[in-house]
Image (cartoon, rainbow, N blue to C red; front, side, top):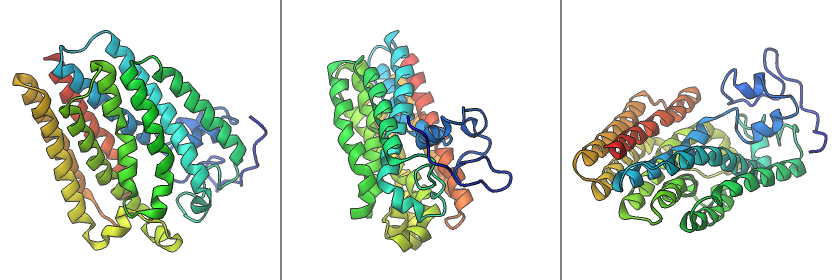
Length: 323
């Protein structure tokens, strides 16, 4: 990749090029080679929760398929590890695409103007090359799966391509994010089972509503800037009613996880699946007790906490597969 644009000097005590909402002391800013940092920042490697939120639905789908069938197989270890790598790569490629399409918006928002493109750490051409490299690496992983999973993986590219533009034409861009981010439920389920079932579709719907929950909390950070530049979001749409909507999303997501377990499992596995739904819902309810909509730092912390909510459901579904 060609020589990078010169980034602006950082404030005192801040690593050169550090993104405003990056995790403090993250490995990219402290340990990665200097030339690689802008590209890793484009991939959000300094903000790992998004990779978790893309990977966790894969764990849900894999665990549900195993629990509904004859349990885990040796091949599932490869599926889990490759889904983790694929989530990192596709999140990186998707975020690079998102930053390319949004670089003018990002330059106008306080939280995002420090990102590599608006801050001049990389050029658009360099970002496009990096996006292609990540997508090709993810494709190499995808083509190790069965035909149905490969087809589903290719179909997801349309959702990835559309999402960055959704905030321009709909108040519900989080729906498009949810459709894309939770595709791993279907893909991992299909990679294990070779087919799709009603339980997988219900779990996919649960992930979609969960995304509406956590990404509305995330969008609360930018309500004022988004209003100034004309960017749409559910956070702006809901306004003073945001708490009521978030409680609704939490209840629906919890109910759909329980429905997926009820449709796919039985006996002790069903009991564990329902316990997972309860633990997941309990975590979302805890977040609501902590939410302060006009406190950006609190909203970001709660958004990140959704990794733990998703892992709780994944843990119980995995236990159901072991039963």
